[in-house]
Image 1 (cartoon, rainbow, N blue to C red):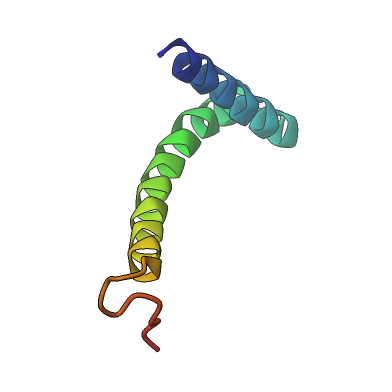
Image 2 (cartoon, one colour):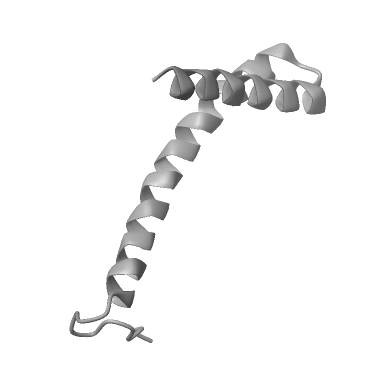
Amino acid sequence: MTKTATFAVMHFAVAFGVAWALTGDVVVGGAVALVEPLVNTVAFFFHEKAWQRIETRRRPGIPGAGVVAA
């Protein structure tokens, strides 16, 4: 859990730093640092779902495995 927490703090700091450096605005930097990880988390959820489907299709011995629908 400590590793996850420190990664979250690092992610927040990087997002804040980049947004602040690009805009020069602390408020924009803070907003981006709060919103970006939330959006990234939702995107990651759908990314994982897509990869689960791909991996399921690639498993040998499963009917339809390796067949990609056009």
